[in-house]
Image 1 (cartoon, rainbow, N blue to C red):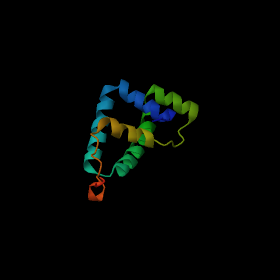
Image 2 (image 1 turned 90 degrees about the horizontal axis):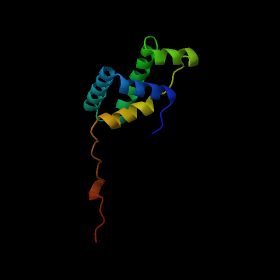
Image 3 (image 1 turned 60 degrees about the horizontal axis):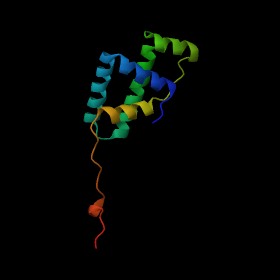
Image 4 (image 1 turned 180 degrees about the vertical axis):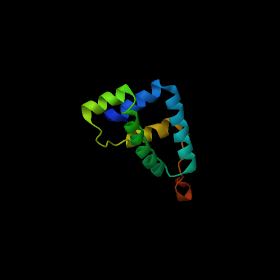
Length: 105
């Protein structure tokens, strides 16, 4: 999965700042537990991750420097949201097709 530069910045930040990473791990897990629709969860997380990026750009040097260089033009965080869901939640079992999905001899 390819992350854009802003997504990568958030991901790297969460790896280095353990308390922030733990907060987001729990947030992602809780969101996934509340809603079985992974797409809806990713949509919600994408919005929250962008808000987090904006908030961090006022306080954390890596974000602040990037915001000065690039501005705070809205950037998608969808790939990061999907990646965090894959990394931090248990995989959902795949649904079997109706009729068992096997071929009969």
